[in-house]
Length: 132
Image 1 (cartoon, rainbow, N blue to C red):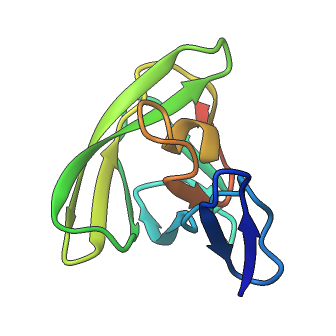
Image 2 (cartoon, rainbow, N blue to C red):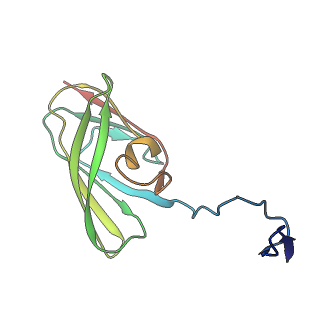
Image 3 (cartoon, helix red, strand yellow):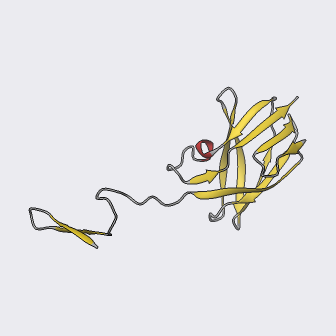
């Protein structure tokens, strides 16, 4: 333990190696995909998914949070967001995605943390190719 004694006599103690003013940030919660169904094809790590427009695909996975429902914002190649409802129960989620138009879509840490404190979630970037 290190300490600093300020001119007014106040003693500040902090762990060895810590930098004064540094705040420990909690690690982000990892969003992990475990399966995709209803798609045309996907990579083995689920980071590239090809599907058809106007067709339901189901993405399942895990995230260590209490039971609740999230909005999953997926970014279209023109920058617009499409929101999907994602319920999490017992740390597992199932998202039913259905894209109204063809194009390229993406989901990454940026989208996962929209409207949340920075670094709440972490996810391997996912590219979705939606075919007509």
